[in-house]
Amino acid sequence: QVQLVESGGGLVQAGGSLRLSCAASRSIFNIYSMGWYRQGQGKRRELVASITSGGNTEYADSVKGRFTISKDYAKNSVYLQMNGLKPEDTAVYYCNAADRIGLGYANYWGQGTQVTVSS
Image (cartoon, rainbow, N blue to C red; front, side, top):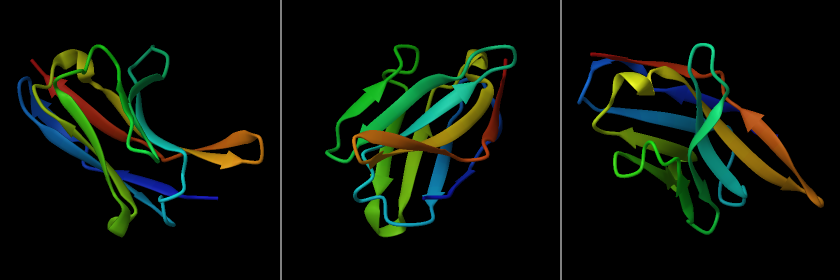
């Protein structure tokens, strides 16, 4: 198992930046994929960005060119640098770890951190 704790959310004006952090309770070196999801009010949870153990990244079309996901093995952490924030980025952001278990995966989630972008 792995526990995830997010931090770095807050209130920012449109065009501003925030950096979200996700600290894992153990080494993330062998975790298959780590990512950030978000859920706006009344909306479904959606993938924002992910990074695999091999370093491959994936981004939602809506954040490409503005957000960057990265990880630090020494700190067991994953980050989401968010630039050029827009009001539509307002949501609760969740950190996710997808860990390979046998032939399947176990998904772990953090408690979420609120990001609010004012216009």
